[in-house]
Image (cartoon, rainbow over all chains, first blue to last red; front, side, top):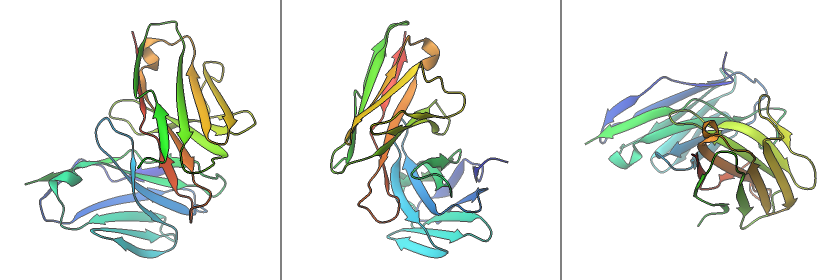
Length: 112
Length: 117
């Protein structure tokens, strides 16, 4: 089992729709969870961070964390073509400090 | 603006030569920086953890004698790819944790494209 696993893509949604990205992790004592957006040829850009169970909203983005299920998700409301990118789920495990483990990424395409 | 800066953004070198990539934290002091490598259409793979004032910790399968890491100050880590070969061509990215931020905010550099010909 991979340490961090994301739902297989690519994911295609129409403009204005909700895009849902999912991620599971294997280290039960993980404490910090992140979603990064990466455009082709560019470095990852932090979108959301979440540390406690529940929802965290920031503009059009909502991160959801369920530690019991070892599951973290990202919802993008009112998706825009500019949201088209690869989304990376990343986790800092219980015994590593600042050491991110990434999922394989989900390619999102928002079509007009 | 960027809080972690990498240089150069891209570099082309001949097979057998060495290339140095710099990673600087601009607004904070980073005792720990991380170096990742990303091949096309793949996710980021951690190569090593760079510790200020001590030896780097390498991930399994990463040759420490080939990928030399130096973290001489709290704001600068360097990665030197020695005796580069075409298979080392990749996107190299560094990251650093801002200790003054809440939680564990990790900032990434802009990345460095290495092409070995």
